[in-house]
Length: 144
Ligand code: ZN
Image 1 (tube, protein in one colour):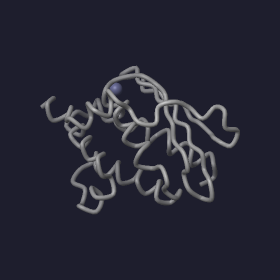
Image 2 (tube, rainbow, N blue to C red):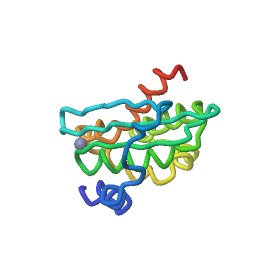
Image 3 (cartoon, rainbow, N blue to C red):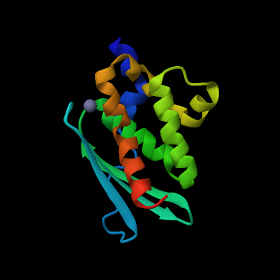
């Protein structure tokens, strides 16, 4: 039910998003704008890489609670991670939404497990995946 979908952590992340903004003033940062026409969501994700790690993440955008909460949670999750770890987290999140993830996957995803309920609402899956889609494109573009 919707109560499951909008757990407290999702609401908190949407109302008080972490890492909002951009890194436009930083010439070594890259960004990727992704949209979800089904829902009208946009996420413009900025990352800076430093010594093989994601040293900073910011995002802007607008849209539904799920898309913005996911971007906020994801930005906290991937900061400080190596590129390989970040790619692993993308796969972990896909596994979470695809079915029955094992406990290791849930441990690695931390608070993002709150979005698991989205899998009962296939039309909302893209909302939850949007920020990871942006991250995936960025990692590919940066040759990671
Ligand atoms: Zn949405």
